[in-house]
Length: 125
Image 1 (tube, rainbow, N blue to C red):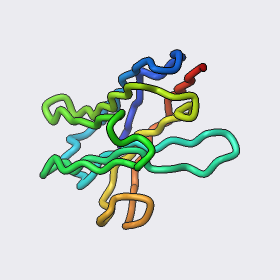
Image 2 (cartoon, one colour):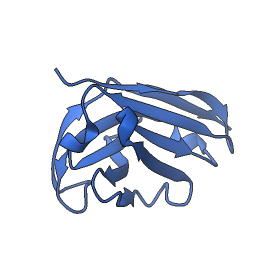
Image 3 (tube, rainbow, N blue to C red):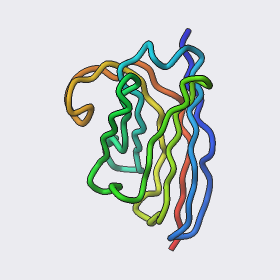
C-alpha cells in the first residue's frame, strides 16, 4: 500500500518560515505530479503547489506565488514545500498528494490518487 507521510508542520509567527516534507513509500516517478493541498476549517480543500516528477515543471496557487517553493528529491522519494513570509491565512492542514492530473494540475485536470494524512500549519499574527 502506497504511503505518503508528511512532516514539518508547526506553529510560527507571521513572516516566519516552515519547510514541509512528504516521504513516499514508492518511487515518486510512478506519478506524473506530486503536490501540496491545504484545508482550513470551514473551507474547501485547495491546491497550493505541484511539481511534475519528470520535467520539474511547477505550478502554484496565486495566493502563494513568490512565497512558497515546491521541490523534489527523487533519490529520497521526497517532496518538499518551503513556505516563507507566512501569513495567518496560510493556517490549515496541509496534505501531500500524488497522481496523474492534466494541466493545470489543480483545481481541475484529473486524478490525485494518493494522499497523506496531513500536517498542521498554524500562523499567528
